[in-house]
Length: 323
Image (cartoon, rainbow, N blue to C red; front, top):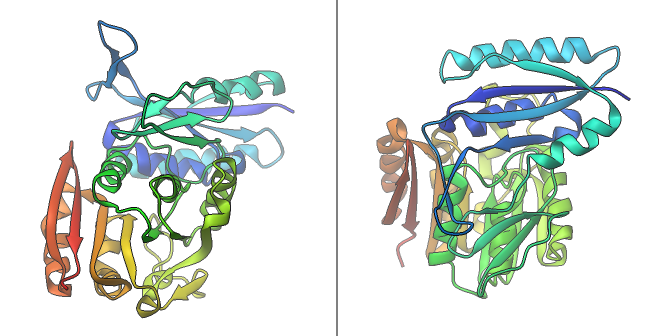
């Protein structure tokens, strides 16, 4: 079988939205992200080069419907380029063997926290003392760990999540935060997403990491969240997506919610109720222009701010439900 490799250069802040968009058209939802790095002078140390564009890729099987999918992807990227710096779509045809190796080249070992390291399942990696290794396969619906929002959430989990606690990953994507929480010692884990592809990706990655038995993975959302529809379309679905979890039934110690401002504002009250008194909400996916809107919604819901972090144009919060 032949394949179309579709790639586009984007600004760093557009990586997550472009990845999500491309996952809707690519084979099995697979997306690869090439993040430019600046290598250190001594050894393997590096940092991300935020001044250079990031390349996002996906692959479409070449068949009678591939041209239509390519055209729809190109049109969707053009609409997104009106909001963000998104370059033109580049398309290259690959044969089966070329494709089989192509996507693997774009997945490398990435440190996304002080302790958390993402390792593609086919890579060999010797952990440093206290490393938490997160093994991931491509084919994920959302989330390679490269985006600032994911990195900030992971760092805050490392710093604030006590062991032996009940944790919910709300909008789990590929399951990175839930898997990190499991390795950090969570006693009970709920990973939930309205996207069935994300749910399946989380199950696969949880199994690869040996934490599937410690995790409940559901399609749906918290409270009224499953009525929102897909965040890129902004449309309210005729039929809600999956189950609606009763917030009062959870009593979580920690909620990790790497979503977007609109959804965080919409679910502020439900997230407060889902936390037990003294429980922590770690939230991100907040573009700086929407920070005040989210902060005010959380205060109105009754949450107390504990911490704030920022990276580039993105903001993350830690809030507590008052005792």
